[in-house]
Every structure is written in structure tokens, then in C-alpha cells.
Image (cartoon, rainbow, N blue to C red):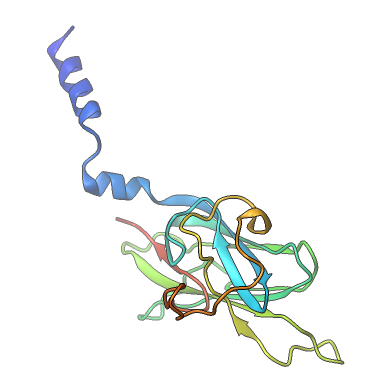
Length: 181
């Protein structure tokens, strides 16, 4: 076997250095399910371990879906410098059963930026088809957002955020890091 090929194979077998492995954790596409669990609004990033932060490449898409007749508002906020996190559409208003929408991460600008994906639900509508009280979404109690939230094994009702069995997590949705590193 030629020495160059042996060297190349040995590098592959050693694995990726941490910076390359971190870069591999970025994706071009994410799906976030929003659902009601008891009296709590929840979101779940499908097939993603960290429910509070996700890394996306510039131009990647984030699809928001709900199966219930739950009103959901989603807004991708600007970063601390005022840089928009998305190309054009910054918010979604889902108002029908089995509703969904897509936002596209911003284009390349030469640096990485963090953007709060603010998710709110309206569990009950008023007499004039308006929402009297919007509720910030919380992440699921699971460590891996796999599959359908209705089948994830989460109990119908449970303690609220900050209790002994559920750690305090920032309400309202995850942070989207548009990662250019």
C-alpha cells in the first residue's frame, strides 16, 4: 500500500479534530414541532439532542409544525448587533390544524450570529376568535427530540418549569446559531 494512502487512512481512523466535528454538527435543515401538553406549550427540535440551541448553516431552513388546533406565533429575533437571522420572512403565524411554515436562515456575512427563535402558543381563543393570553413554549423534558411529540412518552401533565423534577430552562424557544465557522 502506498505511504500516502496509509497516511490518509490513518487520519480518517483517528477521527475528526474537535473543530471539524463541531462543524459537522451544523445542519441545513431543522424541524421544530410545537404542541400542547396539559396546560403547557412545548416545542421539540426533531432528532436533535440540545433543545435549547441548534447550529444551522447560512441558507438552511427551519420548518415549524403543529398537529393540533393550536395557534402558534414564531419570530426569529435579530442578534445583539441588529443582524436579522433570516433572509426575508422573520415570523410565522400558524392558525390551522396540521399547520406549518418555513423560515430560511440568513445568507453568509463573514461571522456567526445567535438568534432567539421566540415560540408562543395560544391555548384558548376568546369569543371573537382572538387570543386573550399567549404562552411561551418550553422544551420537552426529554434529552433527544426524536419522532412525533405525541408518541415521545411524555406524560399528559407534569410539573412546571423550575420544579425539582424539571430544571429551569429559558422559556420561549431555542437559540438558532447561524454558524459560519
